[in-house]
Picture 1 (cartoon, rainbow, N blue to C red):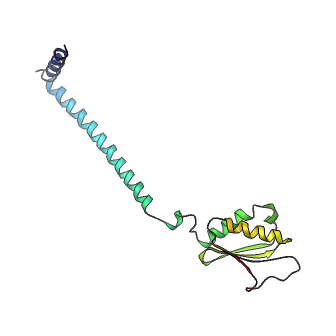
Picture 2 (cartoon, rainbow, N blue to C red):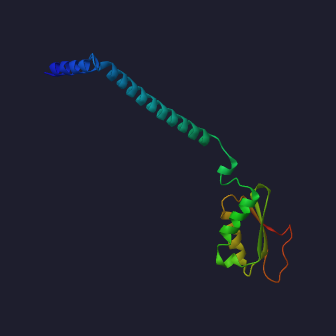
Picture 3 (cartoon, rainbow, N blue to C red):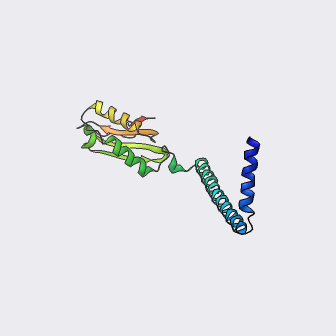
Length: 154
């Protein structure tokens, strides 16, 4: 039964395409449609491969700005100020941050309690990208530390 149905379908297709009156036009239209579908599929496949290749290339190429731990000094200073001064305890305190080479953050200023100084140093150290903290923080009515007495946290 399957063979008979297959033979009938094949005969109908042959008759459709080999018709003496309209067969040439039907063959040409079918050829054009198949060619168009093949071109569209090829174009989509090429775009997919090009996009995948570009994505892999971007993943493999390393840029310093892509690594959040490798940022320039100004960006690191802004990051430290925005994260640390978010704490209301430090937002109005007279504190200055500077960033030197190799992501070293230098803090100058005055805080009312020794615990606040320790907390501020720890918060600065916790900021992503900070490798070292040098603190010249001091208590009110005490002199600012000099280079020998500065607190250095690695």
